[in-house]
Amino acid sequence: MDEISIEKIYNQAIELLMLYGPKFILAILVLIIGWWLIGRIANMAEKSMNKVKFEVGLTHFLVSFISVILKVLLLISVASMIGIETTSFIAMLGAAGLAVGMALQGSLANFAGGVLILFFKPFKVGDVIEAQGYMGTVVEIQIFVTVLLTYDNEKIIIPNGTLSNGCVKNKFSEPTHRVAIEFGISYGDNVHKARDVLMSVLNDYDLILKDIEDKKPSVHVSQHGESHIGMLVWAWVESDNYWPVYFGLYERVKIAFDAADITIPFPQRDVHIHQFPGK
Image (cartoon, rainbow, N blue to C red; front, side):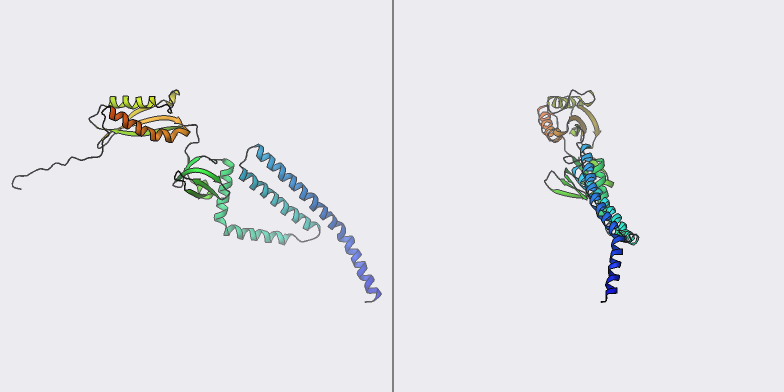
C-alpha cells in the first residue's frame, strides 16, 4: 500500500468522523437521557395510578406498556438521528404486528376484556359472581382470565373476553340482600295462621333485618299450586348472613309448622276407579 492510498483512507476516515461523529455522540446522549426520562415517566404514571387506586395488575401492565412504547419510539428516533432509514423498518413492524394480531385475535379479545374489567371494576377480588353458568368467589383477576372458586372448592377459569361481553351477576356487591323462599301449605290449612307462624319465625330470627322501613320481613300468598298454597317469605339480611339465613329458615319453619300442626304437602294424585256394569 503506497503513501497516497494511506493518506486517502486517512482523509476519508477523518471526513466520516467529522460527518457522523457529532451525530453519533448526540444520538448516544439522546438515548441515555431519553432512557432516564422514560424511567421517570413510568414511575410518575405508577404513582398516579396508585393514588386513584387502580388494580395492581392493571397498574403494572399499563406502566410496562407505556415504558415499552416510549422505548421503541426512542430507539427509532435515535436510529433516524444517525442516518438509518426507518421508513421500511416501521413498515416491517406494522406488518409483523398485523400478522401477530390476526393470529392472536382470541387472546387479544381476552386481553382487552381484562383491561376493561380491571378499569371499570364490575366486580373485584372477593366478590361472589355468577357468570357463564358458574357461581363462585373471585380469587384472581388476570389480564387474560378471571379465576373463580366455587362453594365446592372447585377452581373455574373464565376467559375475560367472554366475561366482559356477557352478563355478570354480582351476588353480594351491596351491603344487604333479600332472601326469598316459598313454603307450601296444604289447602286445608288456614292461610292467616300460616302467615302468623311465618312472621313469628322471621321476627325471632336475630340475623334478619327488622328496623329498616322498606326492608322489613313480610309473607305473601304467592300461588295456588296443584297440591299446595305457596307462602312466599321475604327477609332482608346483611350480605354476609345470606346463606346462614337461607338454610336456617328451612329448619326453623319446619319446626314451627310441626308445632302449629300446619302441613307441608307433597305432590299427590287422587285416582278414581269406576266399575261399569257388565265389566
